[in-house]
Image 1 (cartoon, rainbow, N blue to C red):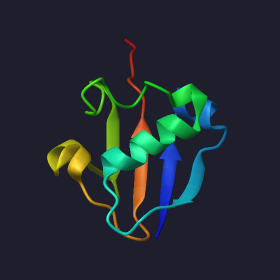
Image 2 (spheres, rainbow, N blue to C red; image 1 turned 90 degrees about the horizontal axis):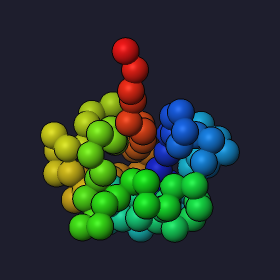
Image 3 (tube, one colour; image 1 turned 180 degrees about the vertical axis):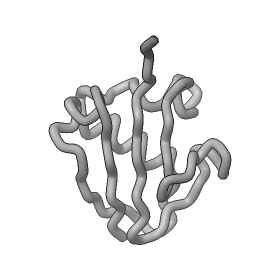
Image 4 (cartoon, rainbow, N blue to C red; image 1 turned 45 degrees about the vertical axis):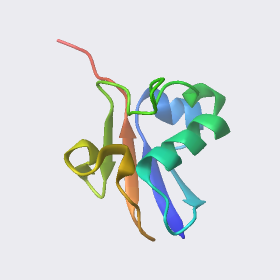
Length: 93
């Protein structure tokens, strides 16, 4: 199944594009997608998941505009046509 992946700020630079599409198995989870992205893109390695396989603090990962931490976190399942957006930590003042 195909999933649209969107990246912002420094993550967009690491991937080289704002939007990419990838094919995954039908039962893929957010955690598995993030793990595959870290393996595919050197600039994302270690940036998405912590040592325990959880989403790093201060990251925002949205499935179709809804924060996955308010769903099932890394166990959130994806379906064909879903959009996963990944935002790095934001600082400012």
